Image (cartoon, rainbow, N blue to C red):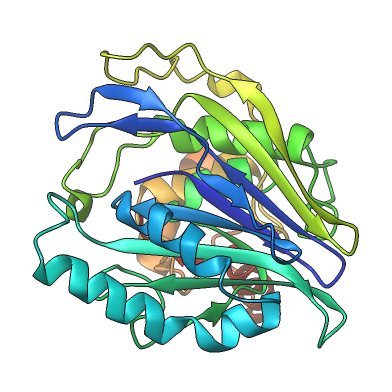
Length: 306
């Protein structure tokens, strides 16, 4: 699978992708651009999964005269052609596809982004081959510790970036660096291997069109596995999700001790009390207001599997 980060607002959609192509052993077989502009209308497509999706998506996109028509009508065509390719044995290995599209909607007079998946691809509980709108920020699944470091990377101490203020260079490159260090999910067939590399490409879609280009390069070599640089924790801000009035040290200790449910932000008071001697009072846990703020913060970057 590949890196795909989408930051969608009514004014613009920002997409970040990598360029590495690799075989079943995880070794790089080459590099290629995974986001392509569309000649027939103002938009771009990004692909993950089997390379068939890229070829089919490019051809399908050009059959439509507008972004709105493509989103409204192309789902059944993806289904028919993907199932036909599977039945004919044209796909091998990991056969799932995931397609992202971003464009300027003339009907709505704003930027929009969507994702479509084949059956078996983890994600939202939507019917397969259906375009699901992306609102806000979308990127790969991270644990709470990574969310603390990444979602605030480059932000001021008491300020968090949002899809509106996201800066591809200031925030996007550190985000991609951490994603590169995380091994692929087991379901992809590349469990534990590093699969993000080559170049980091930026795509911006707004009223004026789609603009694409590389903004960062990794020292990956064809024929070799991807080998991320060692993680340097000192480079990352010591920050907790907005709305939690705890020190960073206490918060991360509570996460490590299992005192915080990272899905609900509920606190296990018995486990939290055991941390008092090291991290001091109070051990009463987060207030209802703090939990609500933390949950809202986590929803800004929905968790999606690779």
